[in-house]
View (cartoon, rainbow, N blue to C red):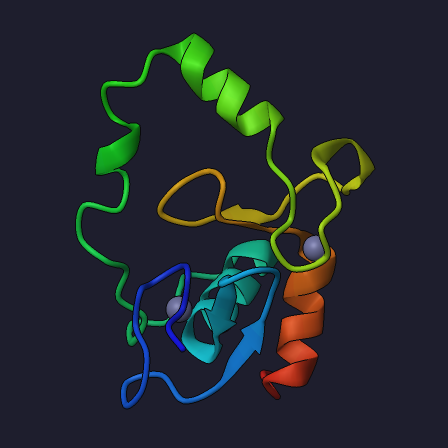
Length: 112
Ligand SMILES: [Zn+2]
Ligand SMILES: [Zn+2]
């Protein structure tokens, strides 16, 4: 299993919460997102994949807006209209986790 957000798998990442289809999130990304949501600086050990935003560059604003409008949480399957504001997108806007699922990942992956 590899994390849909950072692309890492074992041995660098050990614990995962599985989402829909092939989506999963690792403990490191869950910790990072927890910090982001709380407004804390992200932990230094979490390194995002370089070029993570590269695929979004070159897309015009209309394309981006359409892609974001279709976002569903890849962990609970709810669409944007049903979700609270917040949440974090991964390397592509389609890789999205909602705030409720981040909280669930914290619990499942034992992140304080
Ligand atoms: Zn990760
Ligand atoms: Zn969700």
